[in-house]
Length: 325
Ligand code: DGY
Image (cartoon, rainbow, N blue to C red; front, side):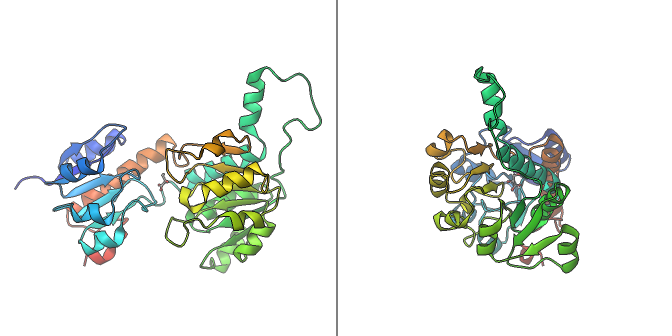
């Protein structure tokens, strides 16, 4: 019997490709650019699995053109790049990589919070510029983290991991989420559930930890930014379109809020021009989960999910169990 075939659309850590090669035929696009949509469709012909990345847009139209594909294994916990209902209708299993990146992403969200509050990029640039002449009472004065209120929008795995870090910094924690966390989790985290309006009004730091869905698109827009404190800091390590980037740039320019730390953007890798000019916007290129260990684990997890599906087992991280009856 001929081997099943897997398409890997873009460079991943090599052990994932080696693992797949041990079991299947592999068409590996080991480049940084990856495949265009048309290339992905063409190269998927004859493949039963596609190992995709968040830069691959697998819309309903694209999915309709994936002949014979049984599983799409995304190398990310987020899967807004894939039309899962369309995949389900086409009988294609979809998997993601939850859990392995929780702590790394929470580390980064907190790093971004601290760097933004204490103006680390500005301080670094200032020392390099040679403009540092003397100690000044208000030189690069930032916002306190200790004792401040952290408002978590979403208290899932990553939101809760950020809360644990915040507790160590003596922060008060409030959260809003469609679902209340179990009482013991609220107790452990010292987190109090509030309405979104109260969170926006009272939090010193607002950190976003929701997936991108039609409901969360532009969850933070001009109206929400207006409700925040003028000293507030917004942190986004979730997905860019959760925030209206143009409205945020205006708010930062007009100092309606104090600063923002952003790892994700609406049209990556493009960034709203105005944001690039603002010292109170601390920007990173979607690297919250980017530790070597975590990105290796994500690569392997996606490969294992693809392999499980091709071997007739239920992948550990299946998003649409309806397809595997
Ligand atoms: C994810 O996994 O969804 C992140 O955005 C990339 O690690």
